Image 1 (cartoon, rainbow, N blue to C red):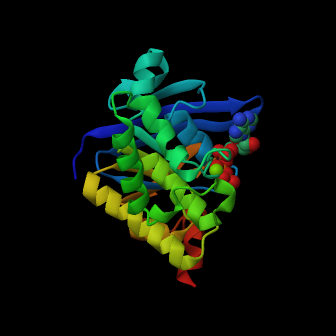
Image 2 (image 1 turned 120 degrees about the vertical axis):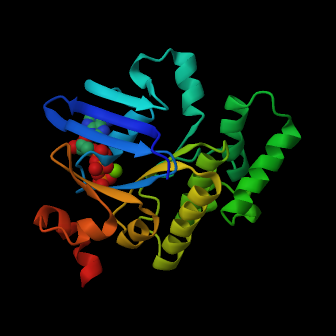
Length: 248
Ligand SMILES: Nc1ncnc2c1ncn2[C@@H]1O[C@H](COP(=O)(O)OP(=O)(O)OP(=O)(O)O)[C@@H](O)[C@H]1O
Ligand SMILES: [Mg+2]
């Protein structure tokens, strides 16, 4: 694996009023790597990736993507950078008034203005086929099951062929078989396109399958880092307790 850092989070601080979420968070992800972030509910995992993608401002520290400090980038450059990052939201965040096909066209029309209508159609169909939902193109989000919504959320993040994919709980709420299929799809994307990813997940099967490395966020810092095996056998109970469900 390359050692080229793609995402660098350095001494990150982020508060909401008196609520100090990130106190001094550090994490580097290299090209082609999948890093899973573990942490208790409410500890700041979603906030972390929202800061990385530029959806939330941070207070102190720095975030560099492809070597560029994002908080000082001019808006146009930030927009170009965002087009290289796919974000799979915890809630799928589909536009309810648009069909599945239109949901996927949206980022293409915005970021790839040179593409013809038929090219856009082709890219949408190809991406839907990749997540096994080619037949859902004309459905409305309300007509989708939870698992389908997750897949469409994933497809929408993939349609621009991003170099970075940030996954916020991609398998939560899915049955174990669908969750495994999604995890395998994530792994396949990493292998085919050499994508770099941060994956937020409580799903230990997904983590075991997809993680090259894992980190545990506690009290706003990167408390421990290592492979699935090393963290699951850690002597630190704050760390190994996350893995209890897999050891039973
Ligand atoms: N936009 C916001 N305004 C104010 N507080 C926020 C905002 N977003 C998140 N927070 C707070 O930041 C903290 C971390 O939230 P976050 O959503 O990152 O948790 P999480 O680790 O992703 O939890 P979960 O596993 O439940 O998804 C919480 O205390 C939350 O209330
Ligand atoms: Mg979250």
